[in-house]
Image (cartoon, rainbow over all chains, first blue to last red; front, side, top):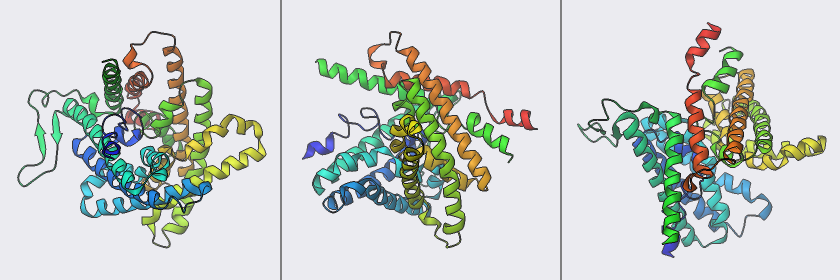
Length: 206
Length: 196
């Protein structure tokens, strides 16, 4: 049972191994905190949709299953949108169009179609948590590279007098701005994916 | 904003794939050969143009008058999904040739974030109906341009030796990144220089 949880984190990592849900992964990864926020949103929606799809798998007719899944997913996305708008307005602002776009994140529909509609509720919950956390970790990794190289900072939650921005000496004064821009995101993603390919092929050999 | 400005902005300056990261999945998945890239590009342009106008009408004649804007995401995605299905059936009836060319790409478009993206961006930018339509077509053309260039690059890449870990997706991302660097040459200054 635990395997369903751990597979999402490395062996079947949604971003680097099965390459699903790329648009938000690159679109919101210019700041570390955005990656965490996006990840949390995706974990919530994925968990909700996996539970409901798994509960309703015997009631949804085969022919209209995709629209039915989309309605379930869209309802959870609307909840995330409203909660984020109410309690985290600045995060909502910086994620922008990518919050409603969680609805078309292929990862969520992919898990509903490939896993939740043929497995028990418990397995689906574990699968959602594993995949969601794997997605969040990958997003954080991309964001870490992009923010450190592109701005020389790491932005986390601000607490009290600490404004939540860690400045990295050396890079902060002369950052390679391109990593913060769109081109940098694609390059970082390409090299990270290459690294994961190299790493998993090496593991297979040994 | 003038229509020409919208066109230039969505094709070059805010290219959906290369600067906004909308529609990356088909960009990586369907760009292995030029023929399917062109098919996908046209199918997306077509659906985006229709979706822009339909979602605009829906938003301004149903959601806003009844004060139910919070249902925007759920209505838009359902409308787009049924629209794609409908377009598929219409094309199949009217022109079997076109269906043969675009058919297999149409179902994939439902989960293409570019289509929902343009619908939402039109609303945020407060475009009127015609502006939304133009934005839809232009964003589609931008998508077509990017995926076409990408498929050409990838066909060339097939002929040269690429280190094993970089083969396939990674090298596609890296070439996409270099393309995005080239597209950075187009910025707001282009608009002011051209249109004053």
